[in-house]
Structure formats: structure tokens, C-alpha cells
Image 1 (spheres, rainbow, N blue to C red):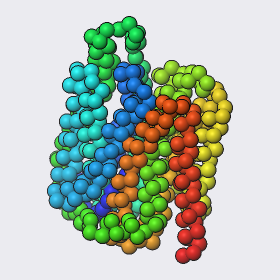
Image 2 (tube, one colour):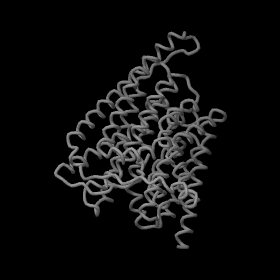
Image 3 (cartoon, rainbow, N blue to C red):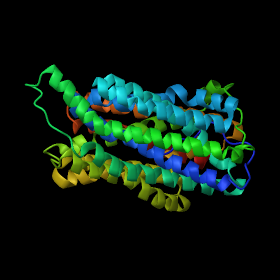
Image 4 (cartoon, one colour):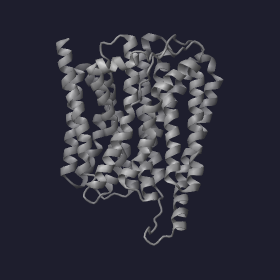
Length: 428
């Protein structure tokens, strides 16, 4: 998923000899958090097999994680203004570290809900970091180069998603054991779940250690942020802005459905590729396609950035949405390798959607309004919680193939937004 844009922009620009090092640390955070977010796709499959879950029940992994964006995005902005970047970063790192360590008692209990609770808290810590990171990047250096720094940071975001999903998914799904659910006793099922949870626990212990180490590095070089101020998060007029701006309303809906569609496809891609109609792959082999799905976003960022310089962004958005729909349709109505490859390729055309929708939704706004609008758009990332649940629940009633109509509807909405904003730009 594209990195979320915070609800406020940075104030004074930080200077000093340690700024470059802090900026490198921020890039490292972008890298890690993208991987932590997208590794949930492998967790969905792992927990589905561990707890014998339906697709709808398994999608609660994404629900627990992404619901944090709806609950914490605006409060996180208010908190940052009160405590500043440094304390905000430190608090977020420690929240994530503590939540990651909750995987230890969750694994011992063998209870699915305990894992969901830990993921919810990790999502809260990541929301705080996401709200802080983009505006902080703009303060760490000259204002005239802020755009290039943000672009570079987003590259690390995509790279982290690709590499961590590639190796993390292989680790999580690589050595799964099997058990006869029908004949196993309750004690045997609990022992099986505790055993299977070890690889997940080890991964999140490593995450906790990484968060504590990064928190320590930020503390050591805290003086580099002395002059970086968080601008006020203005909640006054926020609702009025949203209710009176149809373009913003539509843009928020598109962020909602874009994140939802992207996450939904990633969430169930492994299960989809495992179906005999598609490719009949083992989970470990299907995990490679999951990494290609997220890797496509990395490649698409470079290609998309070039295309957006040459062509109308509304038309590029419409074209990419139309191609995504076409690929899903081909996947649904074919079988074998073609079905698997085409759905995986949707990741390539997801690449430019978040930043393009965001820029079209805030185009022409004054700085104070754009800051408020960005908070609204960041909150709409909650689509990553709801759309996968709808997809999973619908697939339980029908099938994973039939449920592909859910992301098709999402991309159709995005495509129409391209038409809508193109008309608005022509009338301006």
C-alpha cells in the first residue's frame, strides 16, 4: 500500500549536521512499516490454516489493522502537535514494539482474537508514524527539495513492501505442519496452533527489537529535530469542508475503495492461486506471486511517474483503472497460469492510484484546506479494513472468483473519478 499522507505539514525546516542521518532513519522506517503492513497478507493465510477460518473470518486480520486509520489518524495529528515529532516517534515505536511482543502471550494462548488485539495496537502505532513521517520529511532539508525527498521516501516504502513480503511470507508459510482437524482432540488442536505460531512470534519479536533500536537512534540524534515544528491540526471547519466539496468527497471514496481493492486482492491472492482452477500452488510457492504483486507497485511507480509528466493525470488514472478491471476479468474467466498471472499483474496498475487520487482531490486548495483534506483522505485508508472483509464474506457465500466483482466495482469507481476530475479540470 502507498504510504499514507499525514494530516498536517511541517512547519520550520530543520537544519544541522545530524539531519541527513535522521532522514536516513526516516527512510528506513518507511521501508520497515511498508513491510509490516503488507506481511499481513501472509498472516491471513497462516491464521486461516491454523484456526480453520472462513475467508471472512481470516480477513479480520486486515480489519483489526486498518481500522486504526479511522480511529487514530486525526487524534494522532492532535497528539503530535502537543508532544512534537520526537516524542511522537518515540511513542509510536514503543507502541509497535510492545504490541509486537503481545504475539508471545497470543501464541501461548492459541486464541485468534489475541493476535487480532496485538495487530490492532500495531496498526495504531503505525498510524501515528504515518501521520508524522511525510510532514517530517518536508522539514528535514530545504523546502525546494521537499518533493524529491518525499518521492525518494515513497520508493523505500514500495521497496520495503516487496522485499519484506518476499522473505517474510516465505518464512511464515514455508514450514507449515498439517493436522487432521476431524480426528484431532481440542488439546491436540491447541498444541498444533501454539507450534504453528512460533514462526509468527519470532518474526514479531524481531520487529519489536528493530523498533526499540530505531527509537534509540532517534533519541540519540533528537537534536536534529529541535527546529522541526508540527503545524496546527485544524479540526474547526473540517466537517464543513468535507460536506461542501464534492471533489474531496469523491476523492475520499476513491482512497477508500483503492486501498480496499488493493488489500483485498493481496489478502486472498495466495488462497486464490491455490485453487485447482487457477494454478493449484502450495502456499509457499504462491507467496512468490504475492511478492510480485507488491513488487509491481514498485515498478509502476517509476513508469507511472514518467507517464504522469506526459499525460493528463485524470486520464492516466482512468486508463490504469480500466486495465486493472480488464486483468481481473481475464483472471476470472480463464484458468491456469493466465488466470494467476493476470490477477498478480493488477499490482502494477495500482501503483499510481493513491498519489494521483490524492493530488486530484486536493488540487487547487489553499494550504490550510489541503492540510485538512489530507487528514480526511488519510482516514479513508480504513477501506483496507472493510473491503477485504466484504470480499472474504462474499467469497464464503459464492467463491473467490465470483467475489472478484468487489474489486471490479472499486476500480470502476476510481475510473469514473478520472472522468469526473477530467471534466472539472476542463471547466476550470
